Length: 246
Image (tube, rainbow, N blue to C red):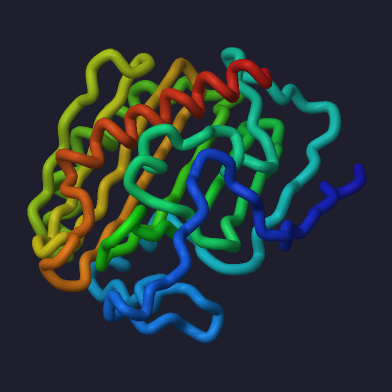
């Protein structure tokens, strides 16, 4: 049997929904880079990176894998090779603009199909902060994940405590969102935090994570309380979009 064909995804995506970032204003004290973007586009994450690294793979090496002849729809959902563009981001786009070079990947397999989206965000308007976003959809074709999903939720606090990454950890259920949903927040203080919304709808699993960092007290990043409804709104929009395409 022929091996699956791998298609490298290299072109940046035009992400719908987010407003274009404003031109940098040198009078506001931000020195634009050689490419005209704010110096806040990239930053070192320190301890925060460790919390996110287990679930995010950045950079090159994103591939679409064809698995001909396998079912591509699970409980009405179908993964797509342009996952980043399958939602208008009605929540996060109210507080952020996108940066260039967002990336998507998709892998199809007889056991499960997976799609991922990775990108960076800048503040909408004035702000000395930024964010990184990760979005994942997994369609489990042969496995009921309910027991494992609940086990991960129940063990989240213990795993974070054992990791020693610091920060205040909070885990709570999100009622009314699919079959099962919970939100994990790791707040490091000073406008730096990591949040991940985890949702299970039958055998379709959705994960939306955002890491934010502030650079000073002026115009800090949105708080976890402010971000939670935005993540929920965006994930609901994505789920609706993928059901329409399925």
